[in-house]
View 1: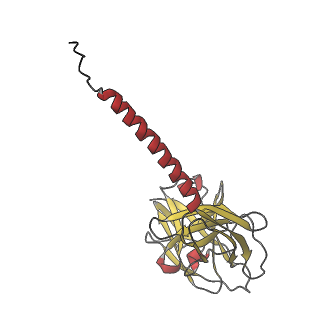
View 2: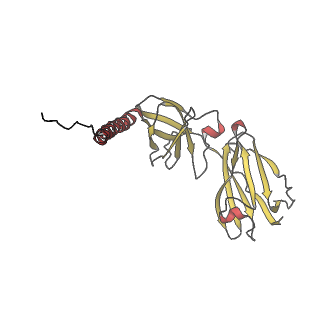
View 3: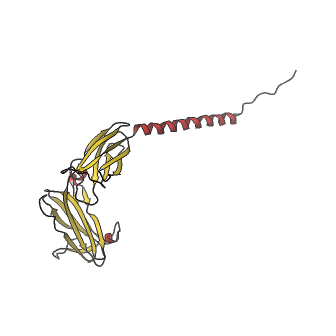
Length: 246
């Protein structure tokens, strides 16, 4: 009687087969997930305009912000005709904030309770979102610093400098933006709402400085209130002088 050899299963082949099955299953799942994400994200399309005249405003940075977890922020730049489109947005309530780098307009998210809010559902492509932006008073600050002691003039993020900013809505500190610099110092500016007192602070960090009248500014800083009417002339430039280092 012939004896046939006993059959022994080969685990390696089974493992290889299982790995292949898992690979294709994972690939299919990943592809399906990507397709699902593409279907569930939406967009907001609209136009930025002057709140008074209705004229389109181009070159403005528009930020779509969802504060609910997880927080989402997407940014777009408005075209010359004021139109913009922000894509890749999950569903949720978005407020639209604006930044005018050239100044002259205020960000509603900074100076008001909120910017315009739009509810976006999964996969929705919202159009005709209107974003009116109000004009504001532009305050300019000149730091005379021929010795270049203020390191912010050279573009440094920290170090000796005159730290300037205002208190916006909700007690938020908002720094003054540097507009330009030269061999004798730097010029800064900020746009604030018309007809509204805005607290301003200038603190010399690692520096000695005086105000425009030549009075020394204490290490704790100088406090002013910025205010200008919409019918008044442009505010005068506020000057500070760097006299040395601490």
